[in-house]
Amino acid sequence: ISAAKKLYDEGIKDFIILEATDRIGGRIHKTEFGGHIVEKGANWLHGAEGPLKNPMYEIAKQIKLKSFYSDFSIVSYNTYKQEGGLYSKVEVDAALDMAESNEEYAEEISERFSVEKGKDDDMSLLAAERSPKHLEKMIDFYSFDGEQAEAPRVTSLKHIIPRPEFSLFGEGEYFVADSRGFESIVHEIAKTYLTYTNDTVNDPRLIFKQVVKEVDYSKSGLVTSQTEDGNVYTGQAVILSPSIGVLQSDLISFKPELPVSILSLAK
Image 1 (cartoon, one colour):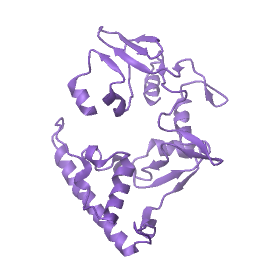
Image 2 (cartoon, one colour):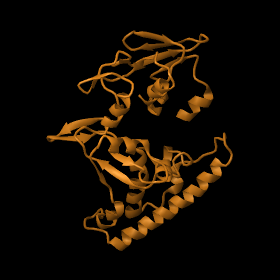
Image 3 (cartoon, helix red, strand yellow):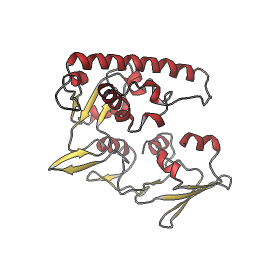
Image 4 (cartoon, helix red, strand yellow):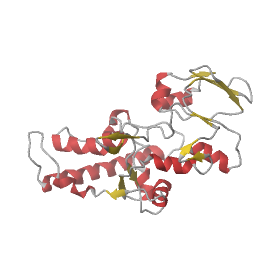
């Protein structure tokens, strides 16, 4: 949706969007649970009130998306032991301070890797983790696994630390709790160039349930995309936005195969 908006803003309006599901937003998705609307994907607006304006946060303010400031300082008051009972605030604060020091050390390592642009040198986020004590492990899980939705051992250090959403946009975080869902931000972007009727997108350039299985770019100036249901779409270029998991699973075949320089990034 964002890529198509960029094309539209540059005066390119002859395009189509192939959406694999029956809605836009991808992993940004809401559902009903126990009579309430809950998020199945994105739930926080990370990075606000900093030196630069976070475009997502600005859109949320514009459409008056209901959200609540997340004060993570209360973590030290609500951390439970595995065998039951609470850790003392002093213990948790000390562990949190150590975690912050570890992350600062990880930033130093990340900067060393990033000095020479174009180099593939990197290491996993495990470098920022500590001993496997229950309290420290919990904080590490909260800080890394929870934030990245992936295990540190398979997460890049230099591309995660320092966290760009905070270093660029500030440390403010807001929990979205709006019946319209986090996806309303996506729709607000889409409404700037796609047609809607009664808050439902109905633009003919957006085609739902089109799962691309093959991309053929072997002919100069021509790219052909074929979907699972046999439809074929041809254009001068194609912009793909699959997840890393899709690229790793070979669900989409490419003719010719993608360059090793690109495939290596998906490993």
